[in-house]
Image 1 (cartoon, rainbow over the protein chains, first blue to last red):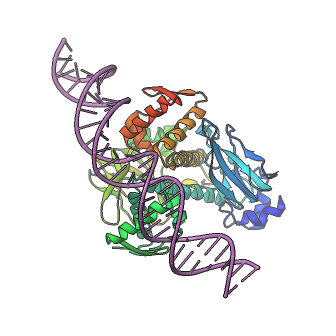
Image 2: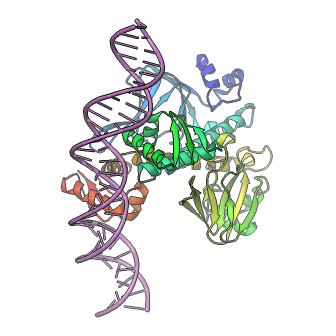
Image 3: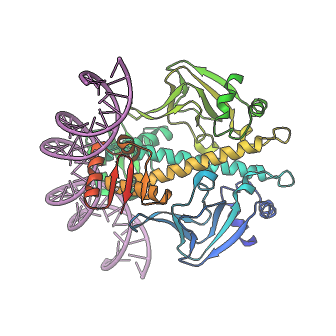
Amino acid sequence: MKKYIPVLKRTQMFAGVGENEIGSMLSCLGARLCTYKKGEYVFRQGEHLNDITVLVEGNLHIQRDDYWGNRSILGHISAGEMFGEAYVAPESGALMNDVVAMEDSAVIFFNVNRVITTCPSACRFHALVVRNMFFAISEKNRKLVQKLNHMSGRTTREKLISYLSEESKRQNSAKFEIPFNRQQLADFLSVDRSAMSNELCKMRDEGLLEFEKNRFRMF
Amino acid sequence: MKKYIPVLKRTQMFAGVGENEIGSMLSCLGARLCTYKKGEYVFRQGEHLNDITVLVEGNLHIQRDDYWGNRSILGHISAGEMFGEAYVAPESGALMNDVVAMEDSAVIFFNVNRVITTCPSACRFHALVVRNMFFAISEKNRKLVQKLNHMSGRTTREKLISYLSEESKRQNSAKFEIPFNRQQLADFLSVDRSAMSNELCKMRDEGLLEFEKNRFRMF
DNA sequence: ACAAGTCGGTTGTTTTTACAACGGAAAGAG
DNA sequence: CTCTTTCCGTTGTAAAAACAACCGACTTGT
């Protein structure tokens, strides 16, 4: 497990904690290392989680099968990312997705109760980890709500307006750049790329905005 | 503030904490009570939050204006609900929405740093509050991810399949009930009610499922 | 320099959705 | 019981999106 401490140091969870401290916290946090061969399941649909996990090597797919067995990929996790933190609440019930190793991978499990209960002894940095975790989930939450707001528009135009308005506010300027190319933006908003491209151009022709590549300006 | 302790006792945040303990924790958590007349703003777009808040009386709207000033209602908060917890991370930036009192309301603010840092002295129940908060946002996170998955389908049918498959899995049965009527389900999935109703009937005619009111059965 | 690949815009067709309007069944109120 | 309201299915039409296919501009690698 020691060899992965440098990876852990760069995670949100351990932000601001030194390598030595991480090393001494591992047992306190109930850390366990598991490795998976390509194709093996890290989690299966129906399991109950009690651990927050960090992928320290490899990469994973989150996938789901619907009632009739049609599979879809919901996301992927790459090294340094945390996952499972949304399923650890006692009331959250069974996991609905599978998590599968796309290549040989290594995962560290942290018992959630050990993580969020600061030990009275030692562990000077435990409170910082709790804080990091809390803010990480909180921030993830915010992003999800925002994305949900963008996606709740009924038309492509509504979604674009919602997203671009937000980005303009966030960057506090009518001129701003977005971190997506067209395909990525379309995926983010769950719309068809060409239809979206079309809609953007219509909006430009109507004088609502201008753009060039990922640089936008609104009027 | 004391008069609202019974309300606080019923919140997620203080689940399992007695009224006496809540009373003695209030100062430790940096609690402040603010009241608002109908129409007043609790938060304004552009503010930075450092508090987790609980609405203890009245009800609030979350609303947003797009770049050209078109207002939309994103949600509402009723007594006992917690809000603002998604915006307290240092990196989360300015609030993008307004929160407005729909009737005379009372809100209790808790400083987030005081909440998530268990005080070394007293406060036997502080650790429980941290745990409650952590699980509350974790669970909210899970629900958001799930809803996002349902909404990322391109067609009404895809959204329905995603939602109903999930519900079937969750209730572990091909027969299950949903907690929505048609209009609520349509709103949840961000589609038109009549179009959705239509699609459900098509799926029924194709032999994929049966339903009656909010009772479903899948084949 | 050339080939291959990526990216973004455009167009036309088909499918799907939103929207509006209506009607019947059921539930609830007076 | 009757009136009103709510819920849900149905239909038709107009609007919008998905989809597929194509093109030109740029990049990248060889």
